[in-house]
Amino acid sequence: NLTSFTNSNKKLALGMASLKIDQSLGKLAATVDLGVGKRAEEFSYNDNGFLAYLKQAYVSYSLTDKLKISAGKWATHVGYELLDAPLNRNYSMSYGFSYGPFFHTGVKADISLGGKSAMMIGVAQPTDFVSSSSPNKVIIAQFSTASANDHLKGFLNFQGAKGKSQFDLVLNGIVSSTFAINYDGTIASNSGKSWSSNAVYLNYDPIAKVGFTLRSEYFNDVNSVVGVGTSIFQNTLSANVHFNKLTIIPEIRFDNAKDKVFFNKNNNLNQYAGNFIIAAVYKF
Image (cartoon, rainbow, N blue to C red):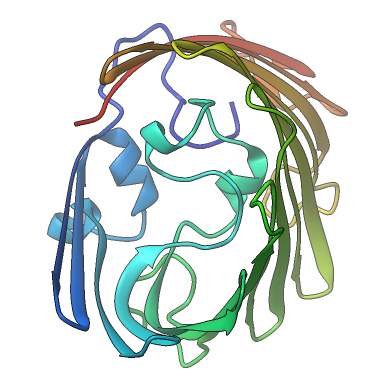
């Protein structure tokens, strides 16, 4: 396929083993997040050695109850999906996640605006680099708000550098105790050309131990900004079966492209791709 973290075929594989440590002392806090496995390596694809396993490492200081400053490396604020499998209901990733930023290294300020609203603004190294000799830095920002009962939340995300920009909107809506609708829409530009993704996530939990998520995404890269060179409509249906701290995720995914971009088992190009995954996720 053409997305992240699930490119093995007919294999048993270790996606990632993670260890995250948080420590706080008064107004000062620190986080170290380590990951081992293919998923962690693809996340830090620009790094070698120990840095490839250092998913996040940052310190924060609360200047006031409304202003916090953080510095280091952290997972991106852009998009709905996250690196860590326990935090997603689909195991495979969207095109929007795969071609957006993975992480940032820099300094940011989190500002409470009162009520349910907040903003973040910062400056970082070029996207997905811990260190870089490039003089061009990236401006990152986020505005977030929510309804009084938190049944509707919105996040407007941005990253921009010289000649490049990305705007992203995430909406989380709780319809009932068993049903939720989420949306992630993004458009990114590079030297006047752009790619975009629009994804809807339907979450249904009929009982506490079983849930279902249908992700439908339309991805457009007809200008070949990220090298795909076509538009793709994908649908992913995942079940989440919970056994205490263990979650089993059987998943069926179908991708339909405008052009022939998927290789089949005979190394011929097709417009269509079908995948079946069974993932085991344990969090403690």
